Image (tube, rainbow, N blue to C red; front, side, top):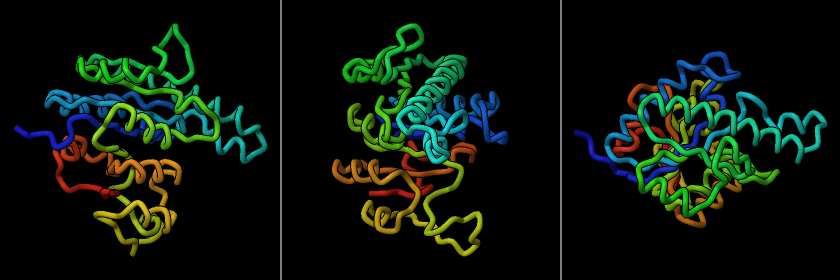
Length: 237
């Protein structure tokens, strides 16, 4: 039986991860597979918080680049994360995991408001907590929300699930000679401007000594491996 290296974790999922091959919307099969993978580590005793992006539905930054007011477009992006959070809740409950959705923008009919002490209590009671609506403020990404929530719930690590198997010095899709890092420092990530998380999130993790592991979400068994401390992906510390 595998043993957990990290018991309380903040799992950061991009909205695109839920889209699967379609790259937009929510792919039910992909969602179901993520839920099954998370169920494995839940059964081992993991306490799991999740921050979800909204890029599969709406990207605030992209809209503001085309002339939309940045604050308005960011709020729209936050609402997209809430749609994804409810989808995750449904998929996880179908795997018999108790789930609570907490949102930084109050919407009492569908989710709890974010309250730190309540979130921690949910985790202690073995409930998965999904954090929607980012930080509740425009101009901040869901990466920053992940760093913030991870520290507030006293997570041991941020696990950033992506479409690639770690951090490279350049885009591995267009550069076959791209070099993968097994371990990298926060300062190197900032200096090389590597697209791991945005600079605010990286700085927040650096200041509070919170490690980040990026790994390939779509490789079967990777969630269990990373929770159990196997060397996959890239560790930022």
